[in-house]
Image (cartoon, rainbow, N blue to C red; front, top):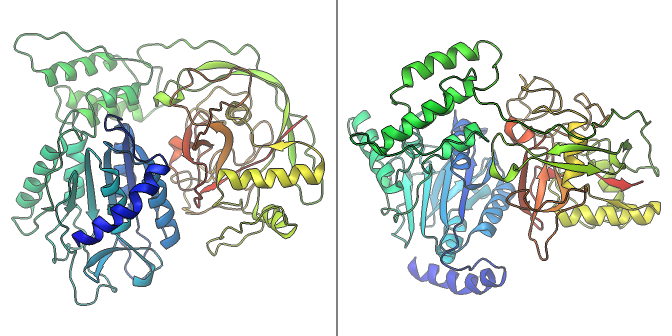
Length: 566
């Protein structure tokens, strides 16, 4: 198979170089792909989604740009892989995690999509080949697969992969052997290892192999194609502190004779939260130091404070009050034409944009002044999109994935598709339609609030469509407007479909406009998405939450809503 990989490299390298993928070796990029398929009709896999989400969370905490997809059919798998491949750069640090069924055919391994057939499978080489071309500094592919399934025929387990420069492949059991049912020891051991601050991947994998071998009495042997090169560390030292505590920084302690660096870090972390009454901060400590010096006390306090409402953290963080608080909208929704999206008049005002709670790219919190504008009361629906197709304004017909069209928000739309619709709508009405800017979107989502969510500080059930938001698991979009509107009368600003906005992606708000306009740079390929989707957990539904995607890549969770100038 080596000759095939050489051929692929020869064909792909010029294409990737032209698209900007071939970068300088020193460029520090951390990219991950997490695929979790559980809902196989003939052979469901219990716990695959939870494993995928836990892995994605650990990678996000470690600063990885994570592409995730769950219960994906073949098209969704390939779109996720394409989005992941577009982010690869030479010298990158890369992790791929797949939990689901896999089969071996034609001397290759295939990942089985939830179409429940071998014909709906995707060749593992579609992930491996872009990696080879990109030449990562260090990469790991973890295939939580090899279970018996109806599509594998007589072959058992997975085929071994040849050693590749910079790329290690891990199977939870030996090639050619079926993974025991319910055996997720390798994933559990790996998650525990990679959460250790500063631990190299090679050492983490050594721990995984030893743990699984010991716990199964050598009945299950983790297989590794090659040792990953040095430099791949999932949880950098202090990273969990920065993520969990946001603006409350922990200062590295001075070195004390007889005190190890890890013990000093343990003590520094504890000292920063020791007077807190916030259960989440004790959980952050336990995640970083599960066997730490203060672990028993941390567990006790976590349970105590989780039982009641969290009191303010031990160190107060001052945030300037907004210069002007917008009042709830009182205007009657309006339409500019038959079949046009319904609009809400958003009043002018000022607010504090961003958050110091989680991610660096949501900082710093800064004041923004907003001019009055109109915003779609709901996300653009399939019904509204299909009218654009019928009248020749749009030429792409997205798949509804068998869920029906009508009032459900249109998804599988990239940024350029959305702008084609807005151009058609502007020509049809004679008014200037556009995407909202990122600051307009957050201002409208907050609707005068300063809390984590538009409805308050904590998640409340039946407020939005997301993973973990409700007792009933939906797993897809629902017709727009089923959940309560915010104070401006806007529906689904949190969850359902992720929404494109006008801005280019930025790694922080240091250069962000303060006048409500969009942040743009020449030739930007990544645009901002807001609001989270049905496929995201509640972190992505926060009013300040933001994430990015390639402007010309379609994905089945992504849609948009319209804005219009007054």
